[in-house]
Length: 97
Image (tube, rainbow, N blue to C red):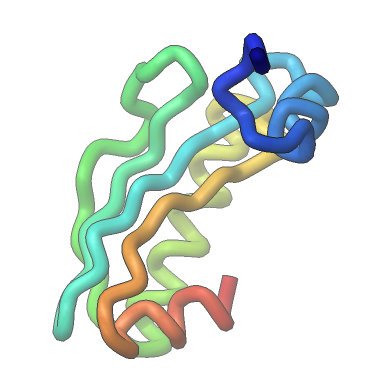
């Protein structure tokens, strides 16, 4: 029996390379016209509260700017993005990141 929630050790190995303070998580709710996101740290503290950004280049630039702000606040070196693949609406976002 495996004593780990990970099916393989890839993510476990990746996470073990960083101090928890160096990791930020970005959950993104993908939608047709506007996406919603927030930036949190490993411990669940909100670094950047929920914000919406449009599904265009300006919106993607806005997201990247928020990432830079969060990185400066926390000195993070690793980002993990979580989003649902909803039709084709996530594709531009994933390709840009």
